[in-house]
Length: 215
Image 1: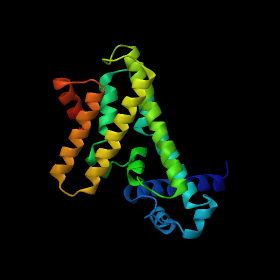
Image 2: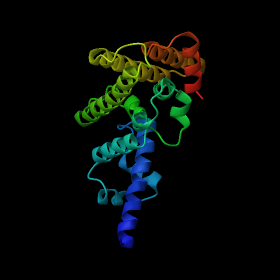
Image 3: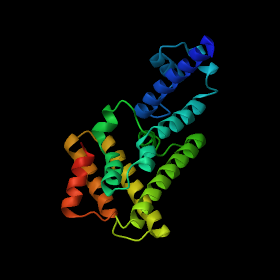
């Protein structure tokens, strides 16, 4: 591989990393190509050597974050209730959303709620469906192994997956819109407990799983 190809690959990766960080912090509409290239420490004109448009970059950002996110780990991790609950409830850890170095696709979902742009709405729906499907497959597998207190009924699993997604996205969207940190945590904990209840985890097990998810 020639130096030029290596350099081009590295430059593209820098742009993608900068864009992902900004999209997750501020959302698609508030991020310009100029801001992305400034963070990447590259000239504005270099952008189009790697991406056709900001929309194309946004699409690449979602795909890249999915590949290395906890959604991907959800499909590869051990078949245990503890693993599942830690993954789904950790979406609600606002501190992680603010401070983690590698943002996940759920962060982009939170930022793009209600977008009127056709391209973004399409990407949003694809991301939502991807996350819901991954969650449903894991719940189904655990139910068939009798590790969850309900049968692996496709309709029931679908409803539980939707309810969990609604709790995850809704709770974080509310928490991110208010400034009172104590109330933020109350909202997040309420969402966490609702998710664990949907999965059939009660009392001491629910409190333990919630605490582990927030570490």
